[in-house]
Length: 221
Ligand code: SAM
Image (cartoon, rainbow, N blue to C red; front, top):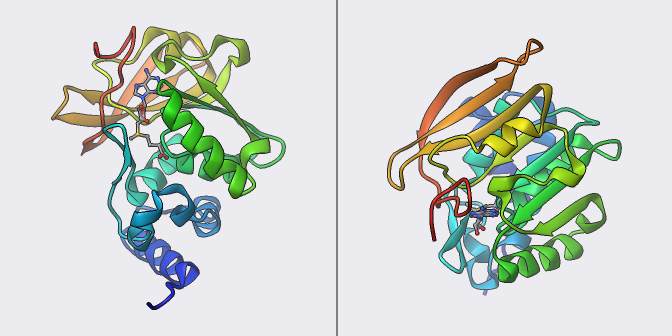
């Protein structure tokens, strides 16, 4: 069997995302070049790690497509030193990309409702050296994570019926939330900004399809 050269495949995918205009910044490009997506998918799917598609990670959940991870990072305007909350850890891949971008002066909190997936992510993050850069919490992320608030950025990787009010409360002034909103089959990616006067501005980016956010301020199980 031919051993796959994952770094060549990774570079080709990232170059394609740059070409398509999804990756627009050097910092997102470098993070996507660095984090090995093949380490965050189930072992039998490693050969598909650099297809630009979501992949199943068990328990009915998915690791998001690379273009969606890159797009959400770009729309969040992540920068070094920021405090970021990710809702929906899944495989841990997107959290690792965020950790690369915010760097050692930043902080990444990621929350997952399914303990089994949190354990999968913990293993993946440990193997790739990201675990000590990320705080992984098991819980209902539709409630946010008050102990570490406020956050400069909140990235929600599961679709909600509305922006959960606790996330707006836990967002810093001038902070941004990137979140898919809609029903289970029709969603739109939103960028939500808390302005300096406290008002909230909403902007739509693209149609999208995520697994549902299940929780107090999400969908019922
Ligand atoms: N960001 C992930 C990655 O890089 O692999 C992909 C996440 S997957 C599309 C969405 C995740 O959100 C699933 O793992 C699901 O269990 C989780 N989820 C759904 N509702 C949640 C909630 N209320 N709080 C935390 N996690 C939730």
